[in-house]
Length: 263
Image (cartoon, rainbow, N blue to C red; front, side, top):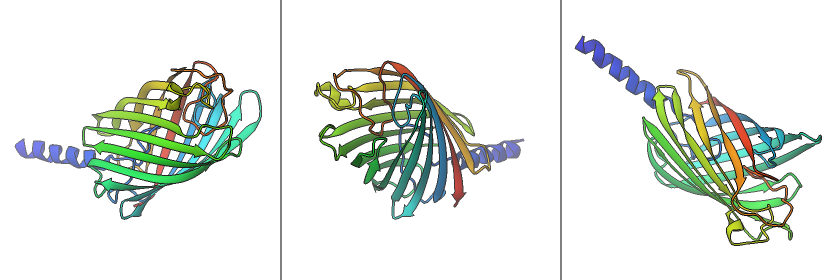
């Protein structure tokens, strides 16, 4: 009996370690390590009411992504998004980033702190330079991640610098299932800039679910919640790439499928 119990506990421990995923959160980007699959293909869909933007698109939005571990603690993250508006019309946007862990990053568990640079082309063909600070903490029973993103758009009608922050937490309810929440604060410069170019600072807090079936190359994530303005400016919101974007208080829901191409 004791031997059977020991074998069962060992199996559960190995299973827990194996159930890592390249992108457990929807609104937070985490860095990869050599313990995870090197190449990952991602597809995400979103639906929003009274919302506009990359992932808060007013209607149906789709995004294709590539995430890869490049070695030496470097992570590549690139996306291409397509939006089908409720009122008709199709738009697209792209972005790519390279991040490097400066603290941790040699194994999947534990604390990691990284930073990176990238570029984007938004829905209105405006180009931007972006940078991101990414932190994460992974354990068998729980994980957390946070991002601070800065964006400089090369257009005189946009803000001098945009600030976006996000936070996510998930707890393991079963070997393959995590449940938690995600929160995001977007265009935070709206708290001190009355002429903020995206219409003001916006916030979202909502539930987050991640499922990683045993011995599967697929993993699934869902997150979303109410979107509301924390501040408002008199500027008509631009078409900058945003996780949230609202012409009025609304909601946004996203779902993602991640496929591990190879290890």
